[in-house]
Every structure is written in structure tokens, then in C-alpha cells.
Image (cartoon, rainbow, N blue to C red):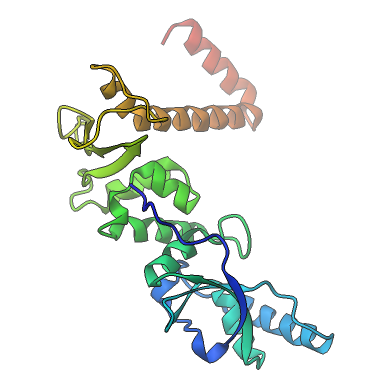
Length: 263
């Protein structure tokens, strides 16, 4: 279950001294800093200053009132130092180092310097390795990291101590918290029920309506249905790409023949 209290979406914009902004890897979700990008940013900053003003977007900082942690903008801060700047515009939000790390995990999913596959992998593994975040469902982690649920499931399985077992994780359906049991090597659930509702809360559907007896188990498997839907979409796209590519005509005949033979 994700935290109910999340950091604000925007904070207070301020000019923050670079000396007050740490750029260590404590809240860095990328695999590594790219020196070429830092150099290019620094050159652009120097050019912009000569033209009358910096036009780079503000970085995102989290603060507890005494310390700052970077949630977004590591390359910009390093470039600003290389360009000789003494301060930098920042969107300052209340929070902790964990808030900064959680923000950093998805901050560049849709904008800024594109993430590499290694960056995406590191982001997912950071959540899976955490005692609290690792209990989130694969779907919740996928949404946070902006990756597919299948990708998260594979990494969770690979991160297990024997490569097959996974720790139980929690998911929220409406007002009900379920514990999702992991699959074992033979594909069976590690418990008779896929998800066990919290005894302190009634079984509800996704909009919070109470469920009749015997129906909760079906709703508790919603995550598996969603994963199956995503797999169907991916499979359909792959088949279509094969059919449209080289050798596509022969592949289409092969698929049609299998369908006609009811195989």
C-alpha cells in the first residue's frame, strides 16, 4: 500500500546557494551521471548568462528545514558548478531524503534526460529492496517507476534469494488492504488464497462498496487479471510486428494454419 501522505506537487520557488545542495548519490535514482551531459549543460548555462539570464528549469529540492536533498536536477546542479554559478532556482518542498529518492525514481520518466534501461532497472530494484516500498504490489511499483508490471514482476522474482520465491506484498482495493502471496516454483500460490483481506477491514470493491460473501476472492485477484491483460496487449503487438516484418507472409500462414487446426 502506498503512503497516504504524499509530498506536495509543487513547492516554493527560491534561489538556493549551490553550496547548500548536496549532489551525492543518496537520492540519485540513475545508474550514473553522464559527464557529456554535464558539459553540454554547463556550456549552455554559460551562453545563457552571457545573453542576459539563465533559462534552465528549476531543480526540485526536499527539505526538513535544515538540510536539502535533490529530487530532480543532478546534472543541472553539477553543470551549474562547472559553469561557475553560485546559486540555482529550486522548487523547494517539505520532505525527507526518502521523499527525494522516491521523487527521483520517476522524475525523468516523461521529461528531461531520457532514462536508460539500466536506470529503469535500478529504480525498480531500489523500491523492491526497501522494507516499506518492497511491500507494494507490482502494479504500484510499475506506476511509480513508469515501467510495465511484467518488468517489475520479473525483477522481483530475480531478486528473491532462490530466484523463484517472492516475499508477500500488500495492495489496497478500495478501503481494504490485501496481502498478495507469492507464486512458488511450480506456479502455485504459496497460500490457498491469492490475497488475504485485512481482518480489521471489510471486503470492498475498488470504489469502496462492500462485496457479497464469496465475491471478494475474485476481486482480490484483480492484479492477476490486469497482468494478464498487459501480457495479451504485448503479445498482440509482437505478433503484429512479426507479421508486418520480413517473412511476415509465411508467418501469417503459419498462424492461420495453427488456428484452423485448433492447436
